[in-house]
Length: 550
Image 1 (cartoon, one colour):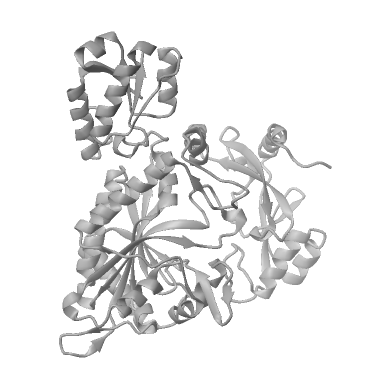
Image 2: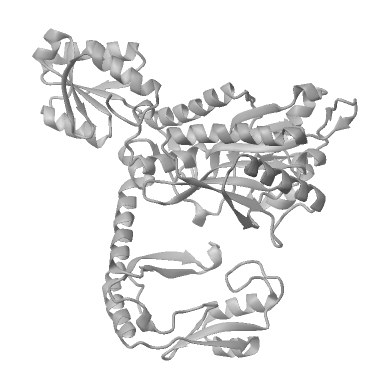
């Protein structure tokens, strides 16, 4: 025997088509645990699955089980017996011969743990019709072209290094420009909305996480402790305990000060499993545009509306218009702080705020944060893929656990409600999504290099330098390609770098104080005076427009 390789997929597909042609029925059986042990005794992984079901460690879909199983579900076709919950189609002939495709082969650790053996996984897809399959395969190929890991290298935005470690991206000057502009846009916008920015560092005492509930409910996602004699420190996976501590340390707060809105671009550290790391979308060090609003119960609805408007504005700037809202509630299983009264109150408040703002939403049980329900904003990109981006959460639990109080109008100490809010989630993840959304061709305001000056010959370098300086003086990010290459080669290279504008300068342009403008789309805007080009570019940049011309 040898490991499977991608070259084996066509032969496997041929065999699958023969099985489909045989129209072999799928026969369902429910068999007792002991019978399953005998049935799968020579298949160690299926036997491990049977034992996990028998112990009540998991359900047949891998979810947490309510109780140990006494039987398991199997499906048989021809001589093959599979441990599977189902349901299946009636027979193999129900699968269209021309509407399935095997895609790739990859390694996968058993149960997702690197400590377990590695298996071989074959990825495939099946659709009702060939047209739907073809559409899907097109989207798949387009997604490969847009893969932010591939484009990140090609455009010189970020890298990963084994010397630094997995899940820890390194951003180049160009990549940092994009990061900075993304964060600065959120910072400026939420400042206008009345949020105040704070800074609370990278680590806290472990005791604080024990008080807040994070230790009991989130410790598996924390990095190991740092011990200094009797002091135990943890890298922060979240900001909320630090923001609540800051609220307390600032002295007594009157109800007149509420709502008080703290915002922070904080680096957080989450000990994600290596097998779950993925480019920028799943990292171990992330920058979160985190916000916590301290308010009264009566202010929940208005604060939700404020956060909702902010989210709509920011997502709209990136052309995320088509998104849905998931109301994530606690479920019967999972790690959730036990306080039915506060959970019910928070859930009612969040539902009321959604309804008051006429937000359509769907409910997802078991998806809440451990301390409260949340509204998650799930956007579709240009390929129809869904990404969870923004979130608004209502928390009655943590402020009470940490003793956060304000003085109410009647002079009594009260516990505020805490609203957690993130607009773009993490900078890294959102940047990865944006790279794929725009295929690396960022809007002009976000592009690391907004214009490339292309002198036709060496004698035009002096004028090219003057053009570049004029643009820099107006705040634009420009580079000059003064290589001794042909003009078309320079234009091609700038186009591959997704630079919005190529400004070609020769004798005519130098004599007229003009530039010949070529767009990265290939469109030629011909020659125009420098002032005209700068005016057009400034208008587009200021408006954060997705267009390249007026």
